[in-house]
Image (cartoon, rainbow, N blue to C red; front, side, top):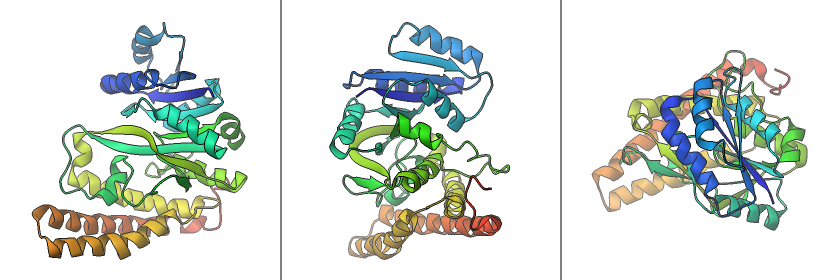
Length: 316
């Protein structure tokens, strides 16, 4: 099965990271593939990309006339793609050589409409000892408590998700209003909204394969405690907004919160009491703190989006 991988880029400062992402796609063991590179409105950057990749038959290049944002750029890449499946990877990620082979096998085994895999961390500045695995989603990494084993989920991360191209087209692609809806730049979750529409339209979600691996570069600023606290707040905000705006939000967040309060926190308390250590104490403290930040964001989102209750994204 032919798989088209869309990789969008816009920041010249991330060019080396982008090259690593693009080259990881071209090094896949799954040979029936193409790489669609979308440069978001930077002609000089497009010239640089073209000089490096224009001689590749398995690479398609496109430069937007202006900066239109990530989701719109992904949609443009999908329009240009020729594969039966369109997959997405960010320009700060690196795909395992077997990534596409694993996705291809997932489609074959489950007759899936969409498939995705696990995000692993590449700690550019070293792993922060204080960050609990339950909150790795803040840095774009699959967190503890997500999906254990192969199963259907609402969505995987946007840097490791794929959809049959005809299904993606029928759904209208990513909703470009997310991240800018009524000036709301804090709203996140393009893949969440897409997964919810997939479930509402087709009655199924994204088939998760934990062996389909993509590593996400976690730069130093993303390990700063203040940045993480702010990120947790806006994640909570977005989760509440999505619960109001999505046609069928699902219970993934509620299930995770339940495990967090009834399993993960008590388990960490028991381990700390049985074998005290500074690292265990720090992670427990940060776990509680970040949970509170998510909670505050959720409450703020509830107040901010109360007027949208009962309405879908398209109706808003």
